[in-house]
Image (tube, rainbow, N blue to C red; front, top):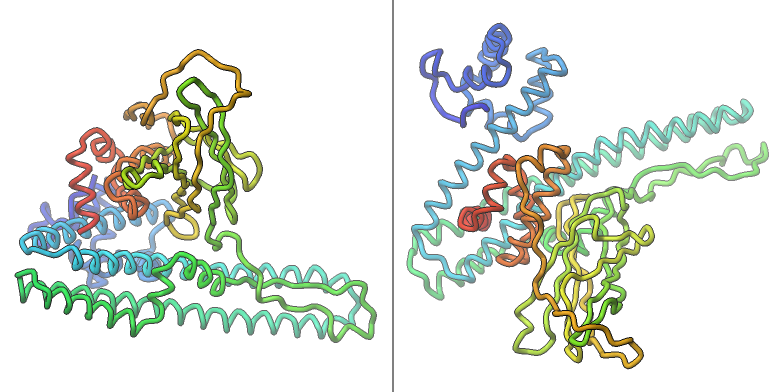
Length: 484
């Protein structure tokens, strides 16, 4: 494993950049070649390299071209950059956390900062999504041109002029779409800077007046509110439904519709460019709790089957479902219980309808409130929640009396995860196994941000993640770091 990011040059044997290259490639000739080429590019030390290109794919591609790296070497070099970038960000985050922990911050101030940080993360995610969409625009335009060629070539020579005209419209759409999408990316970049500046202003206000007071809280609130008022994008980024509409509006694809049959007289109007096609992979899923069905019963109560519908979601995609319930009376309404079933326990009845049987039993004549959440990674990593549904378990005189079976409460434990179990799974499956065990633990502490925190933690090494699953104190420390 490469050493953490360090600054300074030092002797050849202790140069962090050279040492990191050696740890990555284990080939002195290749290390020296890459090292001296980086020197020529002005990237003389490891931190300069990370800060210069660490999060910019376009700059990385330019650097690869300058270094003349082969495909396999690119993969290793890219992994090294990502690893060192994560280490540097972690170090900076820890320094900021230690600095902030020295000053008292009120709950309203924490809420404002947390809201801004959430929106900053969402802004960066949308920026990456739109960046990936620009690549798709190129591919969609090429695919559409191919479809045009296949159809036009089947028709007489009279259609050739129309063929050129249709391609011109596609090129015009592509140019306009790339221009508008890049403009949106620029807007997101500017808004991200505005948010960072707002966070810095709030932190500065807190540092200047280190005593919690109403005036300081008001100043913090006004500073954040000014950003909200001056940036209409905040409402989009702060609301999942508005974000869904925004993504659907900004990621529409292109296609071609053909009018058939066609006569020679209609050649000049043959084919219509459709620039409003929705792309499935960019649509935000929605989840609806649709039904609750009683299953196994006893003298004390019964188990339930939870049925829910998920739209804009393919069963081939990965999602983490969580069932959340609580007693409906006022005294217990805040004492909710969450349970994340294993993937095998969630049954896909149809492409959209899913069911899961509860492990807990529910007492007769008691009213409960249920909802289901799902953690998705496409088009953005987010937690989506269903509607809430009240349900009262009624004893049925028609049900044949069965031997009394004790009703288990909170029986949601999963088998402990071990390194041996992970070793038998593929990398993506390893992260899923860890994520489905982390989520309920984090949800109990921070239900609103559980999905985001899980996503952040899954970037860590699996060995470290296993420690978090087994040591509550270590997990709480990571949760506090994520919230800082």
